[in-house]
Image (cartoon, rainbow, N blue to C red; front, side, top):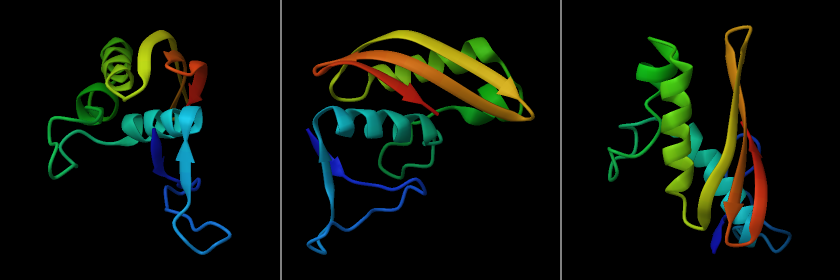
Length: 113
């Protein structure tokens, strides 16, 4: 598995050779998991059903159980993810953060967001 590399602002980056940088293997899966949870439902023009239902689970009506269920389903749908072992959600100062332990084709990974 390979994906375009992105930085902490979700911008694509150039490699030392001035070409688009790529990530592969477990780094690609981790990056794809992080961006999958960041994607809002209905924002992807060709995959409107994909993404997190943030309005329904976090913003308009915070429901941590629905958020966790949606995040687990979103993570499980990422190519290379075999299962979501655990998911811990924290809410503090109007900010949500999570840690997910996932099992991938490359072994276990921890995703933070």
